[in-house]
Amino acid sequence: MSDVPSVAAAAVPADATLLDVREDDEWVAGHADGALHVPMSEVPQRLAELPEGELHVVCRAGGRSLRVAQWLAQNGYDVVNVEGGMGAWADAGRPMVSETGAEPFVR
Image 1 (spheres, helix red, strand yellow):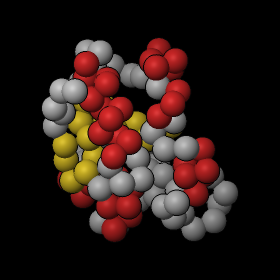
Image 2: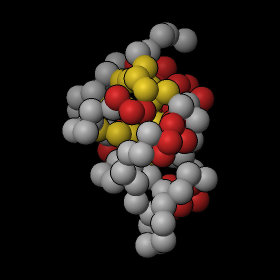
Image 3: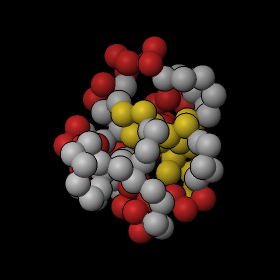
Image 4: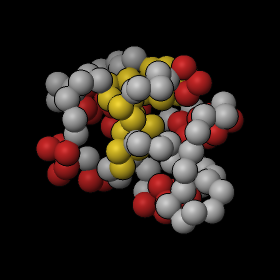
């Protein structure tokens, strides 16, 4: 697999397009406001939903997002992996929302 650039969660630009590849229950518990949610297993079938331009790919800890980012890069997408995933995002105090209205958390 090809190498893809990565960035620390704390350094993701505020205007970055964030692609969250976690499962539905993880997304519901807490995610970055404005992120696009496409679970890892659905990415190949949902490519038409991905916006043009650079995508910052995130999961819970960085492993799934790296695999997705590598695959997308091989398929011509401009991608950056978010190191440490949503765990690092939360640890850095980056804003999060939940789908339940409860306090967001990383599942």
